Image (cartoon, rainbow, N blue to C red; front, side, top):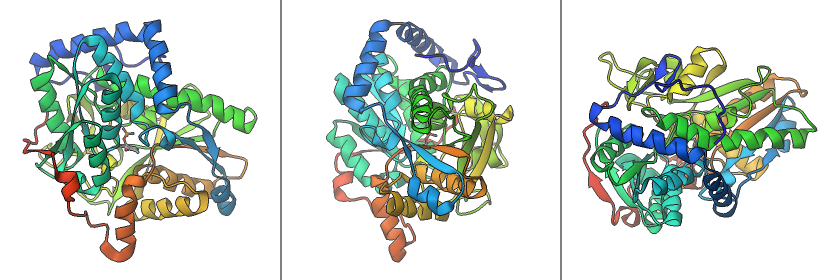
Length: 425
Ligand SMILES: Cc1ncc(COP(=O)(O)O)c(C=O)c1O
């Protein structure tokens, strides 16, 4: 794995953020993981195996593509997309899922555990587990279970045990609480294949390293399609930061390239209406790491809202928090309505249906393109495809107001129910 950053330090910190704020009895499990990862990343056999899976199973490299119609309509900067939606299973998440599967095998673990919001990470993990002959357990909030019904069916078809979590808002934060609990109970035979660059050290580093393939490819491809230029702007949506850190990794060393993070403004700027952690959050501890967290007056993680289930998380990963604090990263917000309008616009003018998560990044890129001259170029990480969102968006357009559909019998069958305690680790 390439070292794309001099962070984290030996204690797992990215400046003021990161570290290991987990209960002490889990320290040996995290140490075991860190040691196994250091061994694995140095192994040429592992590199060969990872490359083979990436091309054979995943379909990498994914291309960089010019959104010519949209760019021409706007008349400003040119917009390019890194097509992570073309990964097998439809999103960037599989980039680190296959890495965790190889790691689990090397560590002698027989099971992968994770949380999922939009279901993209769950499907990617179930796929990697099937490919490497591992068991898989995916925790999902009961509200998201209904919303991304199709992904729940896929996970089950691929052999994963799906655990529906009913607690708090019953979305991504509670699914993460539950998956952390499950890992605490099962770490002797299971590995937590965390869904984003969050959690205690070494999880954020491992996820970032496995996702760095996106930025490394994008840099070479961008130069090839533009005759040697670098983008002026690189844009990604942010929940924990896995797709963002992936694409940024190719350009962190180029100070002339502006890096942009796009957060969900949901239905408004009041507490509980959005999930814009970098914009409205403050330093705190969430899921075992010190980072920037949306908190209520008592310091508990605040409720969040976003039309994109994968963005509805009340924090960011520690490396993203550091990039923001250092001034390297600009942060903007996009509300639900603008994300849906962009979802529809890109579908109709480009023939690409983006995930609602990715539609946030695209919406900001459209705004930016309209303000910048045609000589500038914007690269957007199109982190996933929107098949999972089609039913929801069509209901929204038909006047259903984007109401979460009832869970279908097909998605519910065989799903384990779990009432988690919404705890902060
Ligand atoms: C397609 C897609 N993009 C982006 C995200 C946000 O996660 P992250 O910030 O880790 O990239 C998700 C999360 O589920 C997702 O499914």
